[in-house]
Image (cartoon, rainbow, N blue to C red; front, side, top):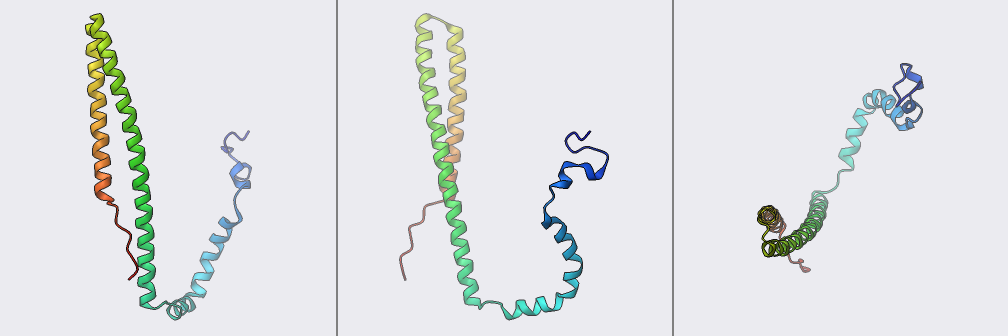
Length: 148
């Protein structure tokens, strides 16, 4: 009985049959290749090391790419939070209509409950506004740099 791979026999586990070949190879290679080729690896790295100017250019490109990715994520979350804020605004409008209806009917309990819901929704809106402001402050849109 092999329920969820919990059989007492080691070879009968479902995960043992689906193990990738890469897992076994990594364990076997790590023991003998590191000791045998340690010297040649260091020499090869020193010989193929790029010039410092190339390293700086590559670092700048990687940094720009990371900044671009961060900016894209920030834009996405600002749009997401702004959409969520729109839903909260719709909910607030609905609560205000219901409050007017409940006041017209004289239902004091419903008015009190709806006003409590309005306070909660307004707090949610303030929280979202704070998050949006912080994202916009942290990820200010930079003008595109022209050619030099």
